[in-house]
Length: 151
Length: 151
DNA sequence: TATTGTTATACTCTATAACTATA
DNA sequence: TATAGTTATAGAGTATAACAATA
Image (tube, rainbow over all chains, first blue to last red; front, top):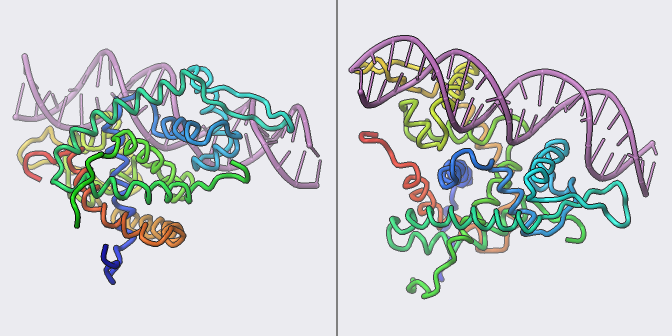
């Protein structure tokens, strides 16, 4: 592959594009079923495994009290549960339940179905360009929410 | 450039990646300053120009009453304003104000600054891959929220 | 004393249902 | 009668500040 062009993309264009992806993701989801933050937090738990409540809050970009309440809602819905940390009794470890994993998978499949219609309507090569950027975008999201000491 | 690989990316991976971008965007924004939907709606108005309230709701994936309230908040903050439609007095046209444009630009610049740190920390080539996918991602967001008859 | 998490409180955001005004 | 938008109401989601428990 050839070298990068000398004129880099304006990073505000990246931000503007990210802004519009919010609306896209909302449109892919059934209306009023689950908030974007809830979905994002479930995805985080699925990716990272059991996590401290405070780490979850940091990595999702919400406050600790907000995460306390979100976890309580998830617990009430049976999607996650609190467990104690063996070495430090102040710590709350949040675990995804089997039901939580199923819900996450079902929602993803549903959104993937809707997304498939859109991807099929794109000009040739667009889906490939998006697929090619996925690893980089994934690394970017990991940088934004760096893992704690020992993941 | 060579042809596409035969084994296409699982579209659930795209959905999963989009989910994580939510947290990234929240982390790029000053905490508690403006909701993701508000930012997305401002971006939409900036991109499309004056829009019917109901079109805004449809394209942002929220209900009409929710958009009524969001526009009222934007109006209260001086970022947008309602105007009447010349031909149909039921219609409310939403306009971005100069202050709204400034606020949007300032927030984007701020997030672009934060994003720049992350992009610089990525392995070589990652930013180029993301930049290369931007046009495709932009077309995807347009497909998700198709423009009304005459934009 | 510092850290982890919760409780208390207030406000934003959103949905559904019922309503008003215009076509 | 149908369409565009608003109002009413209830509940989810969030932040800041004050608190409790553990280290």
